[in-house]
Amino acid sequence: MKDQLFKKPKPSSYKFTFDESVAEVFDDMLLRSIPFYEEIVRMTGEIASTYYQSNSKVYDLGCSTGIILCHLAQLLSPNPPQLIGVDSSKAMIRKAKSRISRLPMPVSTNIKLQCEDILHTSITNASIIIMNFTLQFIPPKQRQFFLDRIYQQLQPQGVLLISEKVKHPHQEIEKQELVYYEGFKKRNGYSETEISQKRKALEDVLIAHTLQENLNSLQQAGFERTDVIFKWYNFASFLAIKH
Image 1: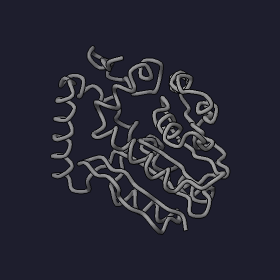
Image 2 (image 1 turned 45 degrees about the vertical axis):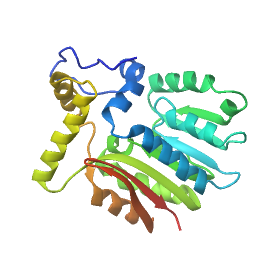
Image 3 (image 1 turned 180 degrees about the horizontal axis):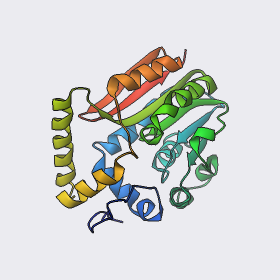
Image 4 (image 1 turned 60 degrees about the vertical axis):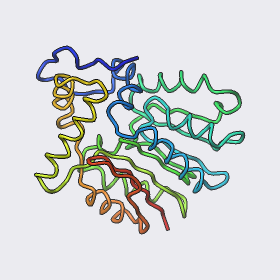
């Protein structure tokens, strides 16, 4: 379904939430709002399949509608690993269940969904943890503790893959990158009104850190091997490998 959530005026107090209305159009929203989203999904699968350790688990924290989970299940078939998707939104979990149900057996049976706050998720026997555009919605004061815990719970040689919206420390560059990003959204059919309303709805909900702040947080958690594997203006993906 096409994303038209912000075509009509919203109350000034409206804040973006992952409710039923968002879940219904979320796939279209991702494709039209995140540059090279399909390539990010492909890269995630490529790296996960390279670093996956036999008999371990793969976690997608903030799995939304299950796009990554289904991609990995098909990529790693006929014997995919145990894939665990976690999301706090019941609406997103329902959409993910629907997508997974369309996968052939026995691929779909290897995917487990958990509706809970990822800050409280117990992670066991994980060699791959994925967070695509998830960390940015966690309150900044809680992020370092969360990354520290992920590092501790990953298997040795385990991999963390993160994609995030990022900000630039230089105000002039940050402002110009926002212009480029809004141009991208306009090319994908969003109007000035839709862009403006969504930006306002995300204020104090999505809080971006700089590229370096993200790298510093990963290194502080214990990840000695890190890399920026994708960058497009104010979007970036990170690879972090546990020693």
